[in-house]
Image (cartoon, rainbow, N blue to C red; front, side):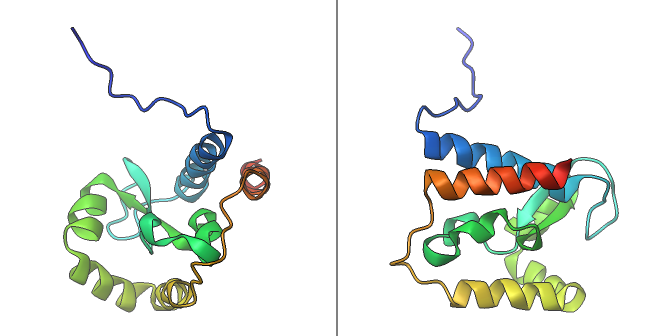
Length: 134
């Protein structure tokens, strides 16, 4: 029996909107561009400067901000940004210093008591990202 590993869409409207917004930000950041590190234009994926697991509370919506996501090819994304975190941080400080500093300030300013993960806020994000792609 063959198993399917495709992630099923959630019946939870907030999770479904989050999934849609994630797909839109990936498409927006990776369209008409190339890998920020090596310049390849294929196999692109958006990498969050602050890991998505850290983007909660008052900074949750920055998860869908194009300034928080950079295009990386499959050769740079996991090996560099995920497996060599110190080297990745040094690269960011040297090549995208202002953007890196902004992302770190957002992380430092996070207030966990403020919750922004709501259906209304995600509908607004989806609408805004859809508008940017048109």
